Structure formats: structure tokens, C-alpha cells
Length: 239
Image (cartoon, rainbow, N blue to C red; front, top):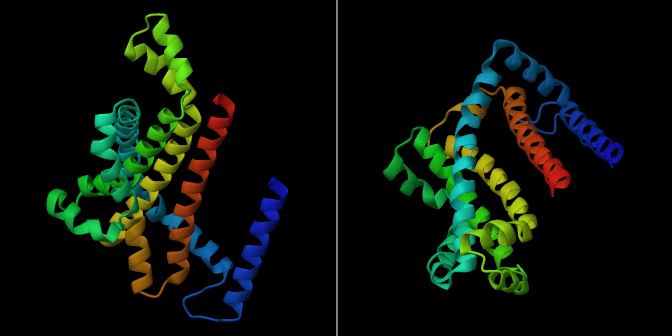
């Protein structure tokens, strides 16, 4: 599969280079110019600084989202009351456009680091929670009955039966939640306060340095893709 992916990537880059050389649009530089722009920003440290600023809220929000999301999902899967209280809200948050929630975020958290974390969590928590909920609901009831017949406590049932049996859905929720956190971070930087990678994109677009703009975009996309790829590898190895 890897050679075919490399071939596909090569075709995309070749088409990008050709389109840039043909000057189909002034806002579409050749891929070679984007690579040169990437080296320039990497050399002066602006790219690493921007990526670090953007990744910080992603890491914090991901950790919080996993704790909150998995707890909510397991609770909804085991409790009818929690299910009725939270499932509808989480589905609405999962489908709501981020732009519509920006005024709410800024009015509560301002435009600083907390706002970025909130934006990431708004996209990550519903995905993690709903996947955990579906995973718990898919657990074979016979396993729980067998556990109860051996006088097992509810907490041990969650630890020894529910979580292992729903691990596939939990792992998928983690990957999708991390992806949501990456999306939330860049949207927060574009819609709430320009900083980090979002600032590189906005600034370079404003002054017409489109090669550097695309370099920032591609770097962030590759970072997210590599992170999700590593999570998939871990899922396959330990799943």
C-alpha cells in the first residue's frame, strides 16, 4: 500500500507544479516555490514557533476531551437517565457549525488560550463521547450478566468487561477526537484570534506570499496526518 500512496502523492505534486507553472491563478504557486517557502520559514524559526503555539491547545484539549468524553460515553451507555440528558445535546454539538459557536466561546473565554482549548473541545468531546456511548451499548449483555453472577461490582464491570469489549469504538473515537481538536485549533486561530499557524496563513495571504501560506497549511495538515497515523498504528498493535 505504501508504494501506491507515494505514487499518488507524486501525481498530486506533479499536477500542482504544472498548474503553478502554467500560472492558472496568481494565488497558486508551484509546489517547488512552496517547498522553498517552507525552508525559509523553517530556517528563521517562525514555522516551528507557530506550530508549537497551535499544538499546545490541541494537546491540552485532547487530554481533557478524552477524560470528559469517555466518562460521558460510558455513563450514557450504562445509565438511561444520562442517556436522555446528554445524547441529544452531544448530537447537536457534533453537527453544529463551528462559526455559529464562536460568539459563545469569545463571550465566555475571551480570545486567549482558554478560548482555543474550548474550541478544540467543542469539536472533540461530542465525537469521543458518542463513540464511547455506541461502544458501550454494543457490549454483549450476556457478558455483564455473567460478571454480575460472580458478584462483581459495577466499577469492576466497567473496568473488566465494558471498556475491553468496547475498545474498538473507543479507539475510533480517540482518533476522531484528535482530528477534531486539530480542526478546532486552526478554526479558533482563524475565527477568534489570529495566532500560531493561523497567523502565518492570514499574514502571508494578506501580503501576497502565497508560497509561505501554502507551506504553513501543508505543514499543519501533515502534522495532523502523522499524528492520526501513529494512533492507528498503536491501535493495531495494542488492539
